[in-house]
Length: 296
Length: 269
Image 1 (cartoon, rainbow over the protein chains, first blue to last red):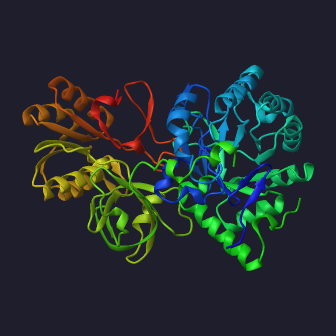
Image 2: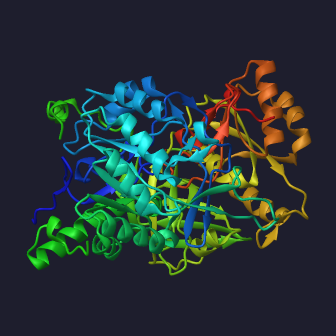
Image 3: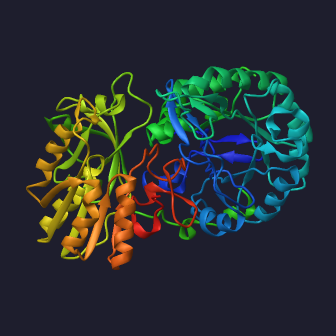
């Protein structure tokens, strides 16, 4: 068995395959051993109760998915007492994804998560910034940096999840790292719209996040640009990853690990199967996962 | 791993709630079609052996061009594993096009089954919900319990995939008749049928306006009722948070955490 562990800053992943936040639940433990995954990532946590968007929240489009779930959340207390315990104890790191509508809101969430046994924080920067008219933090280097800086007091590693919708994602990445981000997740979903045959929007929110195979070339480009700009900063690639080749493509672009999302909805064993494929690939080449070829 | 998390060993692990779930390919054993209603059996994995009425699975084709997401199907029987569906879109059309021996991807069993309804239950069902209720009829018949079914019909000229609703309804009613006493009527007549039948329990899966009537009758008469909900289920296991329905507590709830709920809890109007 090859060594599949990969370091993402101070966190050592069991292997390079982790769930993309928002596409995973501990209930998948009924399907496979969650301890097999590189890390576990619960759905993004918001400070209080949020109903999320009304239905329809998700639709198929062009080989991918378009979603406008709206980050439903039961808030911190429910997360700590009901959700988080199901993710602990699997012998693999737990990365908690958080979001808020102000930079201070992010920091307050982290304070509530200190000492709970988690291993890192994912800052979901795609949430609207209420202090800037609802524009997503992730679109703006300064706004992203403000969130990271507000959270940097924690000793927990901070992973900033970037948006492919940003005009200059490398600039957002650089600002986030400058403010204290330990690693980057590149990237979230692309904003899109789909219509039904009758001309009505397919999603109640009208706009949604495109994920799956269609976004892969875009997010690969984002990964490459960020890796070129910030050599040495750990990157988790995300967007349209289902196969070994998809994972290797992201690594070639500069990622150290990959986050799998939409593929899990299609094939619940997508992640374990990808881990097996990576193990076979590394064994055949006599290399460890951390030695897989990377351009950056 | 942080210092805190290294203190947590397997002995403190929270076991996933629910029985093991199968995910993988299973070959189709038999296929039968009647007026665009396809019934399929599988050489089933052991995980499905204990599945009960109300539970479902996600099915998808492995063929080139198949949609990304699987389609939810009620589990009608487990020996052999049986699904039955009317097809309308590309996803279900590709599933229905499978040949005996062809492997389809299955994910299940998912959801929670019906609570016991007792010896005197009446089922209200409309075409799209027939799978869940047919499973319930089979289960009750196997337990020696009598079941009366009110089948709510659509106008014969309403489209139902490649056939008219009237034709498809006839095919579905024929599936119910061996295992239940079936009354066929329009939705507006459901309350009168309930009042005449005076059942001790009701299970319903139908159009929302019919469900609202059944809900009101159950509340008025103090009769326990259960709703079988049906929406698209992208993941089926609560990860995507997309299979939502508004409940009377003014919150959205995930249908996959049912799909059988006390009828009093669901907002139909």
